[in-house]
Amino acid sequence: MSDLPSAVATWRDQIERLSEHASPCRYLLPAKWKAMRENALAFLDQHGAEAHRLGWTAEQLFGVHPEHGFLRVEYAGALMVNERPVVGVEPDRIVFDRFSGYRTKPGQTWGPPVWDFAARVR
Image: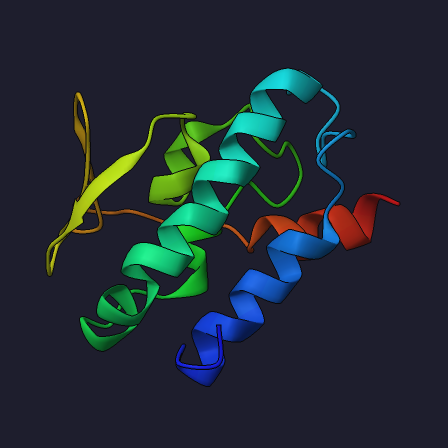
């Protein structure tokens, strides 16, 4: 993945460091986390450079609530609300196979990336 922008390569490294077998949040089932993690890695490989070029941030993609993790989806980044594959990236939305995740919601507050959350709760 040497052709990835450095920020995207860092995001990928951080996701890879999180175990696929242990959810980073106590209320997220390991099987669902495994699928989310796999889709996040696939997203970074397939769409990460474009997302970065369009100005998407780690928080907008991988954010979770700073205290409650995946329980509070209003703080969640686009890739941290489901385990569906991404089919496209646009300036203000991530397109999944059945819906979209937007970054232009009025009043949106983004949580820290899931890897920062996981490091705090260990």
